[in-house]
Image 1 (cartoon, rainbow, N blue to C red):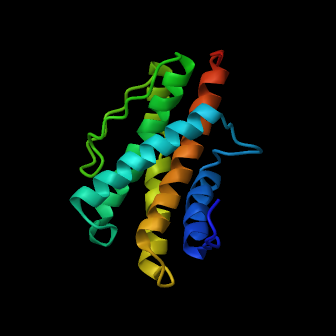
Image 2: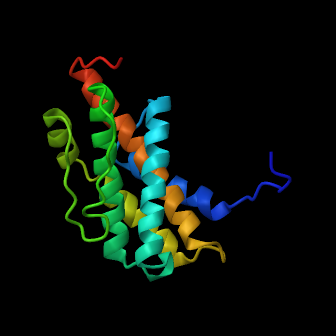
Length: 173
């Protein structure tokens, strides 16, 4: 274990709240959210890939509102993909196409694709986060705040996907 004390970030907490608030505003969550160890691993894998891509191409302080919006849509789509892979016992292979340009492919079960295309969840998440970002992050690292919001977008999007598939009698092994 590390001898370093934990860091605490109100900016990260507030970023997560931006996403949870978006889900509540849209009436998408009631009660406990669906969680699964395999989806947690998928989240970790995806976030590491996104972080690497951001660091390769730009710093988080250089991201535009459109790029940040695209990142939320990207994470949302990858959540549907991860849940589809979980339902079909397939390995995740997250393609990074569309991360910054808004041209995000959605490769998921047809039921999920139709359902996800109807929801404004990633747009509201991005708007809430951007409003918070514009107000200032209390001198906190903007990358930490952004990635915390993206993690919660992924988690809640996975919940939405699991709930949708369960309503259509999919069984997760």
